[in-house]
Length: 262
Ligand SMILES: C[S@@+](CC[C@H](N)C(=O)[O-])C[C@H]1O[C@@H](n2cnc3c(N)ncnc32)[C@H](O)[C@@H]1O
Image (cartoon, rainbow, N blue to C red):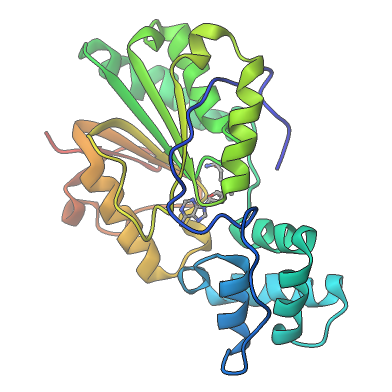
């Protein structure tokens, strides 16, 4: 994870949608486990949804870092060592982020994507899916403040890792009250579970799908597209695109950005 936003905001945690690894006491591997099944269970991560090349690389690194010979031994190590488990989880989920990451995307938001959404009037619901430590959502809130749209905004950040949500919640205390008051955080697997209820004027899902299998990417993009309000905007990361936007009811709205057809 990279550095924090200068201030971070208030938050409300929603019940975790899956086992909280910080509370869990995973059993060591079972005789019938394959290495990957044991790692998935012990890490409480849906390893099946991650690309095999990414998994292979992170598992190889973990074997070497933890000094164990194979995946079952690694699972046993993770089961007995919470810090090793956290290291492994973070390496798989990849929590790299930072304030105003990829500034050209924030320029696009400020100059082209957000002004029409603000001009519509009414509630402005923004969801950062895969928010890591919350820097991305706080950055959007800062832009909204500058554009005069913050007082109508509802800003939700969600992430697979409960520890990221705990961090976002903790750090928000430093944010200006007007921004803190708009922020909410929740623990959510955006591939395995439906989106949070309601329709969203802006969904950011940047640098999440790149680590996922093709099937998980398609599932994720379908879900995100369906969660948009008519005219709502989906912004992906700089290395991401939707192969057939029209099939999901989307039209291109800029580099790596899509509108939901009204
Ligand atoms: C590389 S970070 C990107 C953070 C931020 N969107 C950005 O671009 O700066 C990827 C984030 O996606 C989260 N993530 C990965 N798989 C997820 C899933 N199935 N559901 C929710 N979050 C997920 C990770 O925990 C991590 O915090």
